[in-house]
Amino acid sequence: MSGHGSWLLACALAGGGPGAAPAPAEGPGEAQGPAVPPPRTIEEQGPSPYHYRKPPEPPGAAFRLGFGGSFAASRGLPPPRTRFTLDVLLGLDVGLARGSKAGVLIEGGYSYAYGGQHFFVLGAGPTVRHFGPTLGLGRRGQLVAGLLAHGLFGKVAGQRAGGVRTSVVFHALAWMIEVGHQYVAVGEQSGHEVRLTLGVSFFELGGRRS
Amino acid sequence: MPRPGRRLVGFALCGALVGAVGCAPRVATLVQHKHYREAVCAAHDGGPTRRRLVAGALAGDTELYLHVAPVERDELAGIVGAAAAERVLERVQLVRITTRKNALPLDDFALTLTVKGDNDAAAAAPLGWQVLGVATGEKIPAQREYETRATIGNLLRVAGAVLTAGASLPFTRFKTRRWTGDAPRSEYERNMPIAAAMLDALGPVRCDPDRLRCTFHFVFDRSPDARWWLDAQATYVAESEPAGESCRLEHTVRVGLGRADEWGERFGPRMRRSDELGARTIATAWQRGEP
Image (cartoon, rainbow over all chains, first blue to last red; front, top):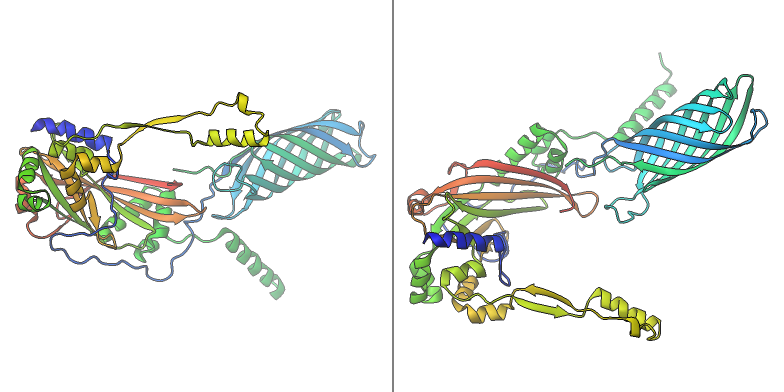
């Protein structure tokens, strides 16, 4: 009856028929059969911790390319008072604990502003992650917000310059918006600027390992 | 020497840090205390050592017992009549596989069996309409064409017509969705009475209410020289966050059943532990996320 072998195999692969189980999985009903020691119930010893069932938060990568403007809030800096700005920043996103929305973003990169302002930027700050709507992507919120402090090192109009920048950053999908304040010192001059930046971003919230 | 106030601030800062970051329990302790929901997720997120530890502990505590025996002619005759039983057992072998496992502290724990022969001519499949068609020689009802106009697209077209007070109707074409599917169960029962009786009486799987002891029925090719293998896949599931996701381990062991004429001696009247039968792990698969 070897010919039935291929028939049975084909049937097993095809499954088939109304109410037929495509694969033998357990279901309700009544078992019968030979002698066997009764099943044991393995019980937990004490209350279970609840740690690993929370989602893991491995480090993720962040990138943003932002275009915007800065507006001098004081007259201490070389003109112009209004500048076009460009930022290219790479970051590392670290969740603080499993299942927690709290995180830290560390980022660094290049920041340009019209009028010969070139800065190397390095900053860090706390973030709130995975909040807001899921936007149809997975089961966690897709928004990220951060409050970041940056150090600025570079040149303005050919003179050595430095400063600090404090920003509130929002990321959603591939978009970001940053509102910041910047204090810059150029030689003997110094002043405050307000910045508004819009841009594209990539924010990987701790990719899942499988 | 630090002032007490400063020390208090230090303790508070340390406490806040530990509270925010949290401390991970040791996986060996989770296994030792049978916290298997946590252990399955911990093993998924961990390396091979953790995974081996958890998979081994789960397999050990599952304590799988097996028994394999053919369904006897008299028993089948009691279900479908002597002549039909004769005809079926001339074509195929009907095999009953009984399993028993322990109850584990998990959110779901299921067992799936697959049987393979050692050559292409020896196959086995769970009891179902298609294989019973081969076994009984009864004609399997042909698949049918079904059609419906109750579709989401047509619903939107109706909504459009209502919203435009019928103005869109001259430009609207209601569509029919067609598909091929199995004939209704009643037709199977009418065409295949012997198969229907066997499915009613035996079913592909029957379990105790607690699902710890189950009986699977398979149709085997009648191949006296074939050596058979049974793959038992245990799926251990722990529900995890976010809601609707889970951690899963699929652990598959392979047991050599030998030739059909050896089963009486090999199993006798009692079930055997899978390790007593020489079960060996052939696959472990870890998943985390949506099932």
